[in-house]
Structures are given as C-alpha cells and as structure tokens.
Length: 347
Image 1 (cartoon, one colour):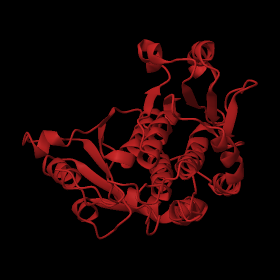
Image 2: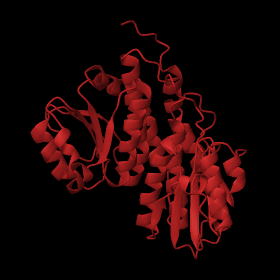
Image 3: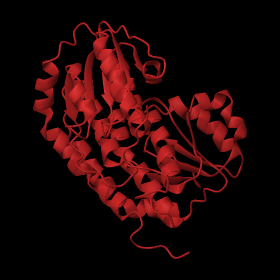
C-alpha cells in the first residue's frame, strides 16, 4: 500500500509542540496561584468533574490527584442527570470542575451552570477563554495549548494533565518545579523513531487491549481512544486490577496487550496481572519505564527520572505518537478520521 508522506503531518506536529505547551503552563504558575487563592476552597468537602471524550480521561487523572493529595471524595458527573432528567442539584460545599478542550458542548455547559445554581463553586479548564463554558464558571483556567487542528486531541490532552497537576498541587500547598518534566518531554518527542520501530512490527488484527492502574489508568483509556479514533478499530481498556475480574478470559495467545507502567510507580500494583497475561500471550508492549520488560516484549517508550505523576503526564506523548504512527502505517490519515469532528456537541 502506498502511504502519503503527508498522512498524520498535523498530528505529528502538534504532538511535537507539547514541550512548548508545558513551558507555557510553567510560565503561568504564579498566575494560577493567584487565581486559585482567589477562591475559598477551605470548606470544600467533595468534588465533581464534568467532561466528555479525551477530556474525560484527563478528568480521571484529576480525580486521582484530588483524592490522593486533598483526600476528599471526587466523582465523575453524568450530565444527562440535568440535560435529560432535569434534576435540581444541591451542591453545598462542593467544587465542580469542568474539563473541555473546546468548552462548547451544551451538556457540559448546562450541567456546570446547574451545579453553580445549586451552590457549587465552579472551575473550567478549556483551550478557549471565550467559550460558553469558560464564561459560565467562577474561574477559568486556560490550558495554554494554542490552536489544535488535528481532530484527535494530543497536546491539549497533555496540557490538561499538567494543568490538573498544577491546580491540585497549588491547592494542596505543594511546591512544584517543572524543568525536569519539560526536559523529559523534549526527549520523548525526539525519540519518535524508536516508537516507529515498534509500530513497524505491530499487528492489531488479533485485538488490542490497553491496561494501567492508578495515575496511569487515565492514559490507558486515552491510548485506547486514540487508537480507536485514528486506526478505526475497537480497542479495549481496563484497570489492570479490574482485568482479573473477568475480562482476562477473552485474552488469547494472539492478542496484543499494551501495559502502562510509569517511572517510579509500584511494580507490585500490576505484577499479578502481568504474570497472568504473560502466561497467555507473549505479545506484550510497554509504555513507561516502571516495570522490568522481559525478553521478547517491546518497550514503546516512556519517561525516566521523574516521579510517577509527572511520568504519566510525559508518557502521554508516547501513546499519541504510537497511535498516530500506527494509523499512518495502515494508510489512514489520523489528522482527520472519517466521521469525526474537532468539536463534538452533545446534549
């Protein structure tokens, strides 16, 4: 099959911009601090996150951050509770954070407005400060990604992860220093040829499953979504713990399994699942440097010398490169997959 050299050109370029986006976010640390200090979060005892699609995966990462660093319950909203079932929300002492690349989806805006009416403090994280969502919340935090032309979100997702880390760290009164994270992001952008080598030998036709746990759970869902969007094949994603509770029965010796294990993560968290998967299939691929890769398995790539949370943020670059290159290898254009729009509006 003849593959145009232009396939994926936009998506590749936008992934490569990620370190600059990270630098933009780092440059605004003091601004974010002032904005967050302007809210009274001292009485907040629960958090609800509102998002769809890729932003929903970023929200899952934010959920882990809030529950580990702040220690209060955090859940993901069901917008249809408001848009379809017309429920009235009672959100006293509740913080609602809406995460959206475009800030335009009506159900996200409507739910967030209903939460505010119901007493919640509301924050939005978007890539458009003039969007309906940004204008409807008590505080808007711009993700600093700039224009994103490819339909599949890349640099905006990575920016949502980093902004979530910044927000929760500042809320928790923790100091963060992002120079090593930015350097590692630049390094991974420059190693795309290593990802290409893995893609060249990757056969998706026998099924693909992606797994992660803890902070990496968000990237597991996002990796599966990116492959589905760009390669147009079904891909399953699971918590590596949940996978043992039934789904592993569908695994065969021909299945391809992508495991996410960020640097500095606890190997024990996924070791039981890895052992059982290795007993069934040898077609195992890794994103992240947190687990020992056995002979015959493939390391796609991943950050080193960062803590677990920062590694997850930077490893998002690798999963995006992998999905983009896999689509191009199969003659598809990941910049504009058939049937998808850049802005998806649901009610």
